[in-house]
Image (tube, rainbow, N blue to C red; front, side, top):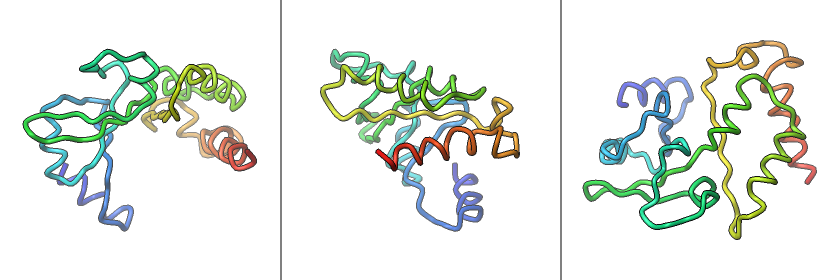
Length: 150
């Protein structure tokens, strides 16, 4: 983690990185003290690996941040929606995505925090340099414009 922080500070010209996305979503509770020592406040964890201590619905597990404790240290866990994340690997339609998020969160009696995350080396559209055929030009930019319009 120290090596990554040195590289990230150089690449992104900043010193503060509040969150950590473990490679290959590899997270275990023993990482919490290490992450805290490096100054992280939150970690991204796959939805399949979140096991609540108290009973809660699937929508609470998936769409709420959680505080997790181990060996006297605590960190916030942001949960990624695995299915939505997997769907974005090969390309996805904004309309489908917005509908799917709506359907998944309509039962929430709290403001849902929906997180998707995918390795950039998976799926050809992340590597495609054409704006007409990649994640940024076909999905991300139009999604942001749609959200800005309300």
